Length: 439
Image (cartoon, rainbow, N blue to C red; front, top):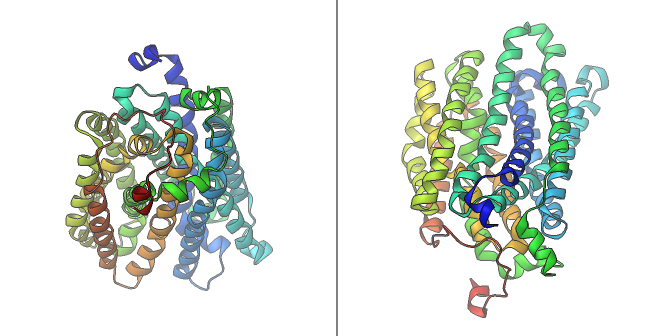
């Protein structure tokens, strides 16, 4: 392990690629759904109006997120029992299958109510998959990382998410530009989903060939695997899960800025969707470039300062930034999008390493997965729906107040949390004292 820690050899490069590529595919699939929602919503949902169809589509987006805690509960323990690698392979198969179904679902005019039913079922399948992907991928990559570069390596997990979202945004911009409105509505919107299914097969191939982590292999060799990780974390690690939940609740801001902001600005100010999608692409590129630097910074100054900075800055600037989006100016939108993405990046670059250092190896994917996906479902998945409802009713500033409330709660929890930089990743969960259990 000393050689691996000192040099990013093929042993670390291969897991980095396979783990991050699967995450890329997942967030491409999720991103393309939100990016093209205004296009396919009237094809799948018969709601009597464009706004009604869009709201139903955003509800379906939220349903996919609602399935994530179930995926975390049922699938996360597999990462602690059969390995990170096997769980990652299962997750990408489910995600790609859901994307294929979305791309092939007949429209409402052809099969009626069965169209949205099939769509929702596919989103639930993808939600279950997403409930396993992040914690398995983060554990897999960070456990392979050199000790002094966990933040840097962990940032790749979110870089792949940004790359997937960027690819989705770019694909949305391309198809809305290449296809005329009629072709786009009839079948053009389906092409990006089919591409997502094909990319999933590539990710599956990479994951089946990658090695398992040394931390998991050590647990297996020492017969230290936990028979019921789910029971273990709920009995003895509630404080750890609270901390992860408080950090993960930033997904509200994450999905608002990296996925939904082009639609938000389009609805709030009337800017053309093509323009806001272009601004979204530029902002995501800036964030993508910044993430490894922020991750490396956390390796030097600690995880806690960056986490606190995000929630303090978002609490201070969410309201003025969202109000500025009511101005029909591309320059204003671009500035708001870039600033917000950089603030969001403070957590995105740091969370994978933080969660791994917070959790013992033999319950890691379970202890990470449940609070992360619960917060994503409660806040991240509902944010586009809430934002759509508020902005279309003329109350877009209400979104800012939600973000401010989240920021205050999370900042308090993180302030009371100890620094975790440099903790060993191969430690085994020990039964806490009675006092710790009460916490």
